[in-house]
Image 1 (cartoon, rainbow, N blue to C red):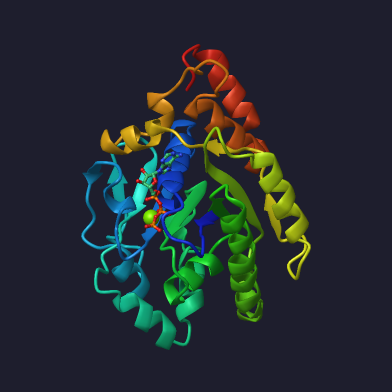
Image 2: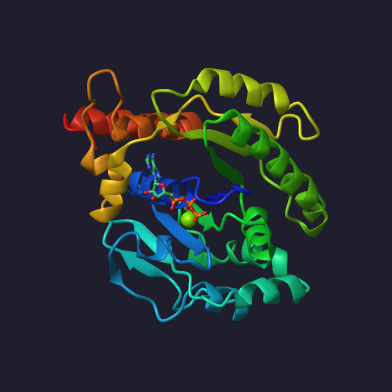
Length: 279
Ligand SMILES: Nc1ncnc2c1ncn2[C@@H]1O[C@H](COP(=O)(O)OP(=O)(O)OP(=O)(O)O)[C@@H](O)[C@H]1O
Ligand SMILES: [Mg+2]
């Protein structure tokens, strides 16, 4: 099982869109995937229709430390969800005050109920706080969408380095902070992603050398992401074919998967060979 937390110290950068679409893509690839919505504003929770709605969600998982009755099923085969049910943000205080607050999620995910999953994707809110800390501590890998503007990119490095450095002592609690992969996200035709990537790479030799790297895969700005959200459908199902020179949403998710999870290259190639229409 690989736990991936989508985190950013900035709001509105595309965390939820990336979480939902990446998780759904991996599920369509035959992986067993669980999404956990760790944002009090529960956008991910209603991103896809549910075929089975569990009685409880994140609050029961965290407060009762139980995996029973908290896992809902989306209509996408192999894609489950623990929904967010904490509109008043009670978890924030609870995690801050409980002795095991920030490491509880990590330890809960080791339970047998989660052993069948290949991936667990945790979406977070774009603000620093105890719930984000708990989600970051639970991750084997952190993924961070970065808006492709130099100022945002610099801010990302500063904010994220600060977050990682602040959380580093969690290693003493058995929760070492995983490596972080930045993905240039929502690039439009006018942005020069290459310059921004160079800038980011040159900045990341600061205190956390090696722990932050920027992926080669770049996710473009495209209305298809909004359309997919409106139709409650994974974006790779909506845009299979490339448009002129621009790679399709399917191809971008394949590239992202190949870069982050090389062990899935073979199943992807096999699927592509099986169906000419992509996955
Ligand atoms: N690749 C994309 N191209 C264009 N628009 C996008 C893309 N990805 C996401 N969006 C749009 O950007 C907006 C913000 O995306 P999203 O909700 O995923 O961000 P977020 O980081 O989860 O925000 P928050 O911090 O509020 O949780 C949404 O309206 C979404 O439809
Ligand atoms: Mg969000």
